[in-house]
Image 1: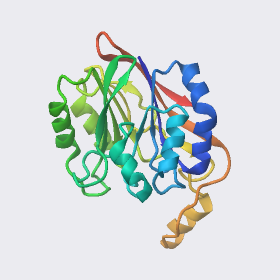
Image 2 (image 1 turned 135 degrees about the vertical axis):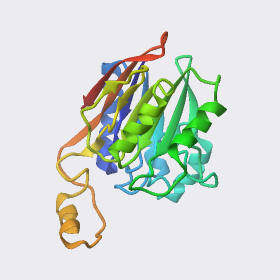
Image 3 (image 1 turned 180 degrees about the vertical axis):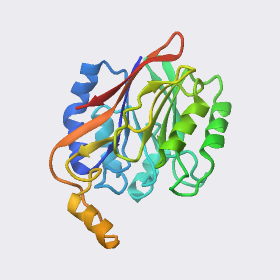
Image 4 (image 1 turned 90 degrees about the vertical axis):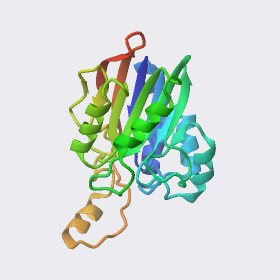
Length: 256
């Protein structure tokens, strides 16, 4: 089974790129499942219900979120109703939506988990114990597990991956919008990459207009960011898992 994971979709330009290209790329790569992080699709800040539907119609099976999960209130009801959109599981239980789901892909039950790091980010519940509880609760109800680790700290993402090696079969980081070159198969057979990158304009600063970001750093005045212009690229990784051994055979970085 091949699973394609794409990094954070940035703005309407990134969204349009997904809409125009995802089905063709899914077929070209032979992907059986597509996961997209959509938390920046509404021009950097959050994801609207219509943005979510665009990605699902374009060929995504699952949308994950992050620290901007609740920026668009029109998404709240969809978060609670859809099995194809999940937000970080370590938010408080009263937050809309859920942090994991089980999808049926070609007869296989895929446990999909979204969790957020706490180093240099919001103070949420411990990601380690949160995912431990999910795996214990869903034991026997899934064939494979995958997880989006939405976090700022590379060391925290790597630590989470090492801890769940062999228990969560596919793990990838999101949030920093910069693809890392550490795609690997961990000792117990899980596939991992620290950050997928992003799906959006690559000529700015992590998808935002470079001048605005530079001005923020120079003046320390928090002007609202806008999406950059220029070339659009989708970045991510393709995971090939052996359904017999439940071990990942390869992790390949993807750009289109």
